[in-house]
Image (cartoon, rainbow, N blue to C red):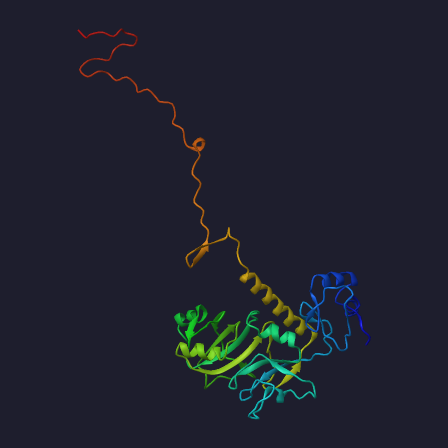
Length: 319
């Protein structure tokens, strides 16, 4: 295809009108091959160049998106130097250069996204975006309530702080009326992570004295594993891809808001301690202070040892 102005490319792709496209370009939101374009005369070839708006590809036809239910025993990598089975061996779709999004260790199973879209990969895996990943964890016994709270507050393990964004007891998975975890896992947890550090779930359980027998990822952002069979894969719908992009963008915006510096009026610094400013209550101004009322004269009392003096009688010595 011939080289065209970016306004036309965005309009033809249904992203926006040409007028709105100009605003997107001037706002620095349009990039070609990763380079922001700020000139209205900028051009690109949609067949050879990658045009993005806010990091989202304008044309997705060149990308493929799959979800895979990874079985235990497979390596989550595109290539393995030891020639072991990888997750890409389970998605034989031809000569497209795919890669797994994120990682699951060899003994873990569950949801993996497979794609050739590097933008989506970054949104779903980079720690700064913190997209939720949910895991079903089968254990040898249920942690106590205090340990469950520790998992959320955070646990120090090998010099690294690990924590879940949420954790709660769960029922064992059921397929065809049979408990998959029967005879193995005695208790189950549903645990949500945002950062996804190396073997984080297993290390957290080890820190509270529990053994992981089954570890299955069941959700990435809005994408659920559902009833997809072990070792099976399917292509994602356009709606599912859009939902994943939206989840990454929302997480990016949330993280940016949380990390934004506060103004001086909102924070103070004393040594190494920071906290909200507490302003002392204003002192009352003189006109606001309560004024003393009129002095009331005490009623005259009768002198001791005699009758009270008659009203209007002249003062004098008593007889």
